[in-house]
Length: 500
Image 1: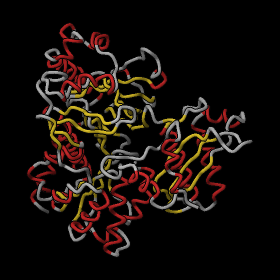
Image 2: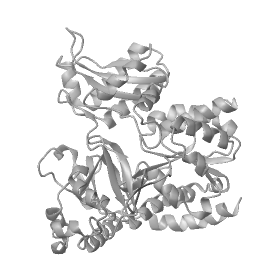
Image 3: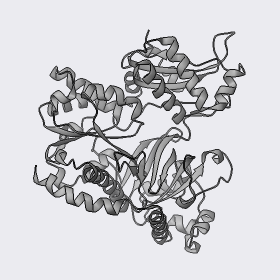
Image 4: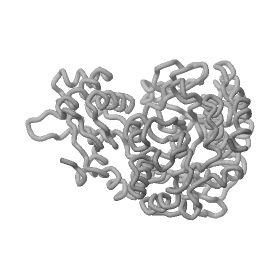
């Protein structure tokens, strides 16, 4: 065992005791974070506009700071881009993280010197919790590969701009640099397919022990690695591979095909980072959900999804949340985001400590007929259907078909790229529809009331989703295909890639 692994084990055990705050400790930590944010926020342009100097507690804060999405903060972001200081947070941000918005085009999210520490601390703590619980630290003595966006940054005046994963690449601790792959040169390749090919060439002979990335792009890497080496499984190439760290999308639909490529089960560490802040991470291999990061620069609020469309929805703090309720998550951060609706929905699976699962996006749902089907219902239905019919999937998307062939009822259309087709197509489709009905009573009422016909599944050709993302300039990096939508903009783009 190498020196890094030896040193890490006692440190991980010590760190985990500090990380796992109990319910009451977490609530106290959140109150402290709010006061720390207000102390700085009062000195900013935003603070003066919202009279934060008169705010001393959460009730007053909720009255003073309205809920916003990116459009609501855009005028402040513009002043930051023009070089103004002390706008949303003290001074100027270290970076602007460039992300793709569904309604706002390109978004520029400020990252301060305080908030970059949140990103690094949470990533480190996820690994430490894993080491402490499993006693597996041997991956620290081998190579670790992070499949991510380019670390090259643009300049806008004095501001540096880039993708979150590329920004974080500039802050890798020195003790990990020798272990880290790919090389800087290969990481900077813009074309994603060329990048993956170069990384395969670079890594195929290495002692890879941990791999991190968004599942669909890691899957592409694995497939090209096996094609290059002629091996049957990734473990034949990397016999010491023991950890897969992932985030960005629900891993469950990918798990079957990933384990098939790897050659068996693998320990996973799920993370929930975003440009707006590192929100949560998997702290246990035994317990469900992700541990909320409650003591590192983010003050959380939660809106019950049932109230999201109201003009003044209820805003809850951590002490008021309940198990099993879908909430829209709201962030207030030490990069100057205030009352910021990130667009994700979460559900608590534990209140001591506070653990969440991500259930979808506030704008990714199907309600063309009033059914309001959400990602959690779609994904869990699909998982149960494929497990009962021996199917394996690569990717999927669901959209309403409101203009079917004349004489037909409307329906939900599921576009699925299979790596292994169901044993019985009719049984698979019927099972999938019945499962969705069991999870969404509104959808069931529409089916039984003959407003909708049962769902239809349209197979997508091999690499169809990859090819569509490529045609849209969104292949690789932090980009993800939407799992569901209330219109057919993405679905219609799949038409050239239908299978048989």
